[in-house]
Length: 437
Image 1 (cartoon, rainbow, N blue to C red):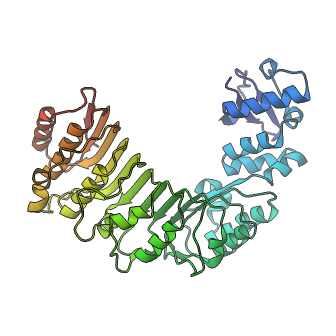
Image 2: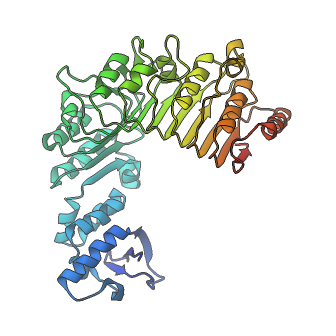
Image 3: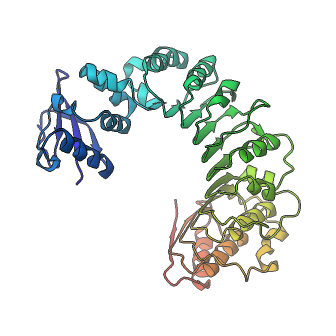
């Protein structure tokens, strides 16, 4: 049974709570938030009521504020984590019990949404950190399992270090996100590397230089680096000490991927034996495309399910070779997402033009591929040859989404459509959706 919690605020800030599948809502009051509660939560609610009384949740039509307090703390905590933080902390005005629950919210997300409103518009970022985020952390009780600091105008400052130092003292954080919006990269201090319970890490515009004694995050399963200042040696040493990584994203440019990158894809994936989701942008792909790349990796990426490549230009041979290497080395891949970079002024190298014609891909079979999405595709021969290969080698393919680059002429678009109709398809059920942005 799906139950919805309705929070209704009148002009006097008195709040009534309705817990019913089909409530009759007063038309003169403003509905501020609706949360769909999952079946797991409902099971907990039903168990709670069955243990505390003979009432059946299905028979409950309306619950008022005092009745909500009989819900178990973990249920209320789950409800609050489903709300935006701004709304969750507003419930603290209800009663002492609700203030207690607000002080125990395990998920803290500080973003632009939190600071909406005229009262915050004139505050500097430092004031927001000092006068808003600091008090919330100092008054917080219980474990903090998820922490996110993503403010569009956030720049590197010492307050960030103080926040991380506070979090590292208890070291309960499992999901940590820090996105620097403007200015220079923020250098992470040694206290950050004490967050040993991390399972998910997302960093943007940070400098990643672990101390020599750092032995990785042994529980980490998801890693997202966006414009993180790091060298190849540090990156490989870090991920090899995070043996449980299943999702890996590396997005950056020459300003952030520092030093000499002399390790190839073979060395990279030796450090990622459990990889299931891979996302890389153009420059990291070029960094790992060193030396003579094999047509297929010596150790296949058997667990890889989703491959996401962005900013690739198949006019450059190295990027085309890299994409083919990753696809043909992933026999169980289910989804391919590619965002191409098209510049009509860039000449296609002769090697890239004939690369797929010169190599034998007869043994490649993508038995598990279900979906492919390509945006900014053009009439460039290497790109069309790549699509042709995927269509011919994917017997279970169901959908191919292609968004043509808006610089492609209509006459070229017509030719692309004609070519697509003539390509051999291993899947008779494959649907090709061809659109312009």
